Image 1 (cartoon, rainbow, N blue to C red):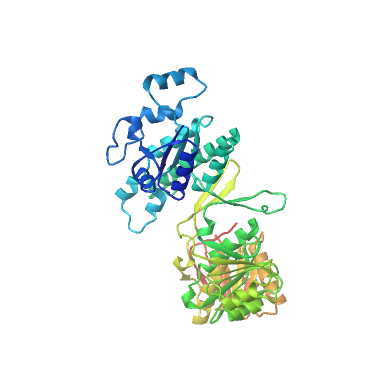
Image 2 (image 1 turned 135 degrees about the horizontal axis):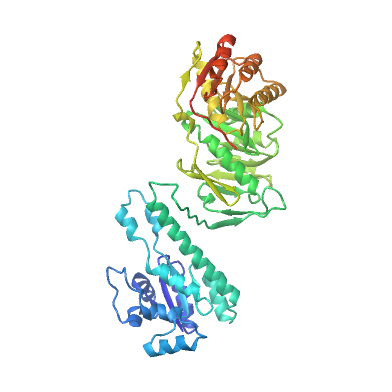
Amino acid sequence: MIALISVSDKRGVVEFASALAGLGYAIVSTGNTARHLAAAGVAVRAVSTLTQFPEILDGRVKTLHPAVHGGILARRDDAGHMAQLAERQIAPIDLVVVNLYPFAATIEQPDVTDAAAIEQIDIGGPALLRAAAKNHQDVLVVIDPARYDEVLGALRDARVTPALRRTLAAAAFAHTAGYDARIARYLHADEPMPPDLTLSLPQAQQLRYGENPHQRAVLYGEFARYFASIHGRELSAINIMDIAAAAALLGEFDPADGATLTIVKHTNPCGVASAATPLQAWQAAFATDREAPFGGVIALNQPLDAPLARAIDEIFSEIVIAPSFTPEALDVLMRKKQRRLVRWLAPAPADALQYFSVPGGLLVQQADPAVADDPLQVVTRRAPSDEEWRALRFAWRVVKHVKSNAIVYAAADRTLGIGAGQMSRVDASRLAVSKAAHAGLTLRQAALGSDAFFPFADGVEVAAAAGATAVIQPGGSIRDDEVIAAADRLGLAMVFTGRRHFRH
């Protein structure tokens, strides 16, 4: 029996190869893997002993040979295949252990050259994996060091089942597909939405269920690159969506400018505030709506300290997110086993694509850029005061993250009333006014942010009646002149951004 081993990820390979040798396998290997095994005392033959041909082109060609692929692809139940192997003196290969050149890790290195990236495109490795996976009824194929023990156990107990062979083969094809997809994305760097979109994402974890208990759900990809659970039950599908929404909103605020805290419920912010301390930010955000935060998500863009932890502990919250937690804060927050604590490790890339499932395919779009890049144009006779400008900018950063139709009333450092997901914009404004009144907050001197244009003047009239003095909106309605005239008549300052921020 022959095992062909050629791996870039050498975790556990010495132990695995030694165990295979103990089971009677002759170990054949290539280049660095052969040297690594030999240095550890494993009896190993160079692949050139099979091919009778040296590695050439700096190792670019070593396994692309009939003596290798014939040994893998020959069907053991086909007398003609086996006769051809015997005639050509080709030995069958029964086990292929391969993982590919580290292309993805290479291109993530700073200042990597294109030549260095291209050199890490594996050719022989994918060919070996595909050949072994195709002939999986006769050849075991292993790509993941995490499965070494499972495979060894099956070999020792003589229970290498067809199901295990098929599972390993599927993993190999998924691995090569993902590898090729990553290369294609790299080569399409100047065209993020290529003519053919190929996605391959590793399964990160099975979730308890989806949006509802009767829906199965699985998390794929690299969510753990950006968020790490440090306490509490595993995250649900809804938890993950809320965490992403909260982090996206906080991405609009620079932690260097002060602590910003948002409370999120069903991906909508129900309170946002910035302040000198995390506790002050919490107090102002919580004041926006003292009912909706129950069972919600609390996210902060600075280290979470003990005073804030004690305040949070007074209400039931599903998740608390922060870049870090002080030991004292953890001591308070971890007393409740059901509360989930999540470290925010890094912001998502600004150029990340967004994917939405639709019948028969995916809708893909670029991420909505930060509102700091939006142009601002005063369109009324009265320009905003300095305080109104601060409130307008705050409202605009928040309203982008509220489901459409969206209205946010804000002061310079906090939300005062939020109207989300209404079928008409004026209803969203009325809802925001109602929620502010219910919270006991005045809207006098407030700024209003609208995620899209006002189709009629009634939304501005509701804002003025509530006490708002400044409005920020994209503009672009056929009735902009009427809306601007209403703002002038009511003494409002109005700013157009020229860019809307719908969120469905």
